[in-house]
Length: 182
Image 1 (cartoon, rainbow, N blue to C red):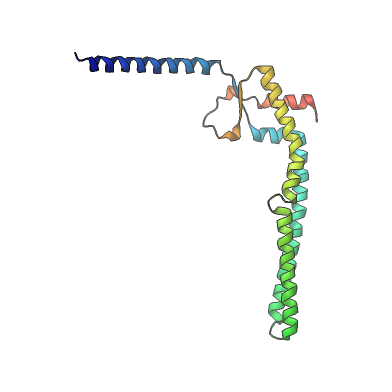
Image 2: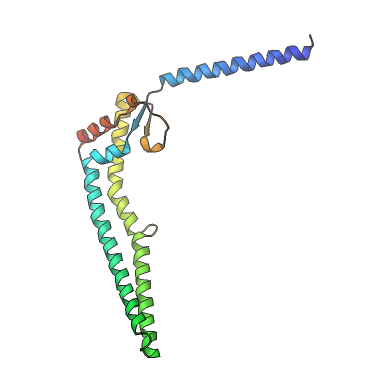
């Protein structure tokens, strides 16, 4: 038998043995890993402070939307009135109305950017309302993980394809949130 063939066979055996050892080692480590998951929606639905903040947010968001809609309606009324009268208006009056319409549109655009734009009032308010709750939820998750020896905890929103129901610790996190209070 040629020496090259023997070496090749030997290399294949070593590679196969290495692959088997890696698979066995990863199986053993996976069995020692304690994993949990949290249903984000269940936390939001059952954690009372989150519900209160959500209600406050909804009221504020409705106020901003109502203001934007009111400004949009005023602009539309100005446009409709202008369209009806533009044929009978003098050149000077048309220019005045067009300037007023532009100013109204600019005001609406500025309001929309200020409130709903990136880093706008709405985004800052949402962060202000949610940040303390998210910190408290993360604290409860960490406490449950440490007390119960979890190595990894995923949230349901992490788009995992399968999670065994035995690993759901959402109720424990909710209980811990109740225990540590608002």
